[in-house]
Length: 284
Image 1 (cartoon, helix red, strand yellow):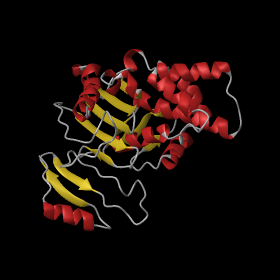
Image 2 (cartoon, one colour):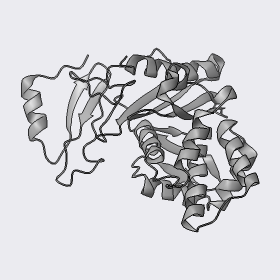
Image 3 (cartoon, one colour):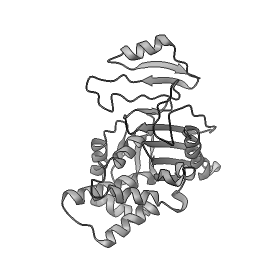
């Protein structure tokens, strides 16, 4: 368990240029001091636990998380009021997004249409809806190509101020992100930067209506009043591991969870990690 002494608290308050590294049972935990600019990126704090949790909303709040899994997993919770991020010690470790990044594909397409004062057809909107609600892959190819392929991922990095995200040509699925960047992307969708003012409400509505095998994680345990919006990714890859990515948006918070584990454990093991992280962070 991580313990902060009064002396450490003073050091944290006085730090101005470099992160201070402490040690928990799981490894180093980094606290980033605020910069003179006060930018959200400079004021983020990544920690597996905090002595005085920062409330990130009425449903989820920062706190300790413990999950039993033989594979990789990480998480990040972002308070959208302050920009503060808390998470696991490996909060910056990348993993691929699989279908999770379809939320960006839709957002990028709609924002750019709005910037050009173009009105997508009814059929186009139907396909975008299928891409989000049902995770349709065929339509995703079409929209990702229309967005400029790798250029779209680069726009995501720039527009949403991501720092641990890389893309590859001809694939949204192989985009690699950290849990921290997943939470940042979720905030970018929530505040309208990603889809633009005209389409943000529509996109969030579609993400709240996700159905079928992609409806897992926070949305399983949140009360209806929280109106959680999600886009998840899940794929058994050639490395014989399930790759899981969970993005969620709620009232005052966003959450990113990543996992990889042996294929023999099944998809539900990774989906359960997303749910268990949320269960341990809920503040009600």
